[in-house]
Length: 335
Image (cartoon, rainbow, N blue to C red; front, side):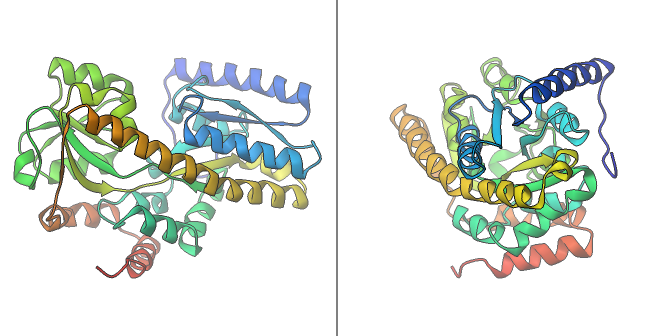
């Protein structure tokens, strides 16, 4: 895998090889289907967006190009399926940016805390040349970046009290994804970062293993975390997207005309995903507010932003990263 570094256990490697063999056999039998994975369940906006992409491809190619979806983590974790995708066992994969951060520095930029001022700012920035540059940076790693999907505005929730300033977080144990960037962010705010999978968070909150976590409205609601953590403080500290990638080995087998069809169908699925996502956010927000959770705006984010300076200095090192950050900040709407 050119330029790509992953670390898998022997068991994970065997699972990946087995999954790849099964998927390859399936692909050979159909001769048409593009095989796609997503850790989110059926009905989730990203899953339905890729299905919409498949509908468009099927229609525009006269039935030659179709997508078969494996949702709900059927093929393993995102890190595992990303490994499978890089060596061609999977054709398409919707992944979070976190597992890409270790292989391509430019993917770290959209995940920087407080880089985007709003979802609208994020969408405007990544729908243009900035987003294209990040997607194109994946090519040397045997991945073709097709498009970005929303992953929401992440805020803090906990079992103790409302968070109004960084001081309110001192000593709290906060769950984060397995990402060096997220760990550094939590430490900079004076809390203790506890990396764990999303599926473990509810029980960890109930048992007091952690005091809180951070995520978007739908994840806070769908994981039932709001039942254990009655305080949700709207910091909106990270508004990072997710990304749809394609295996470069499968991409190279497509004709130029089919490459154009695939790219356009992916881009055309984005508005559909956003429509579903926005509706999902409103539904989750209503459920949480009706449950009695204390939700508070954080009116002064300057103290939080100030404590992110060392984090930015650590993770924004290359000239290319700095150029992207500057371009995104230039697009920030006037306050």
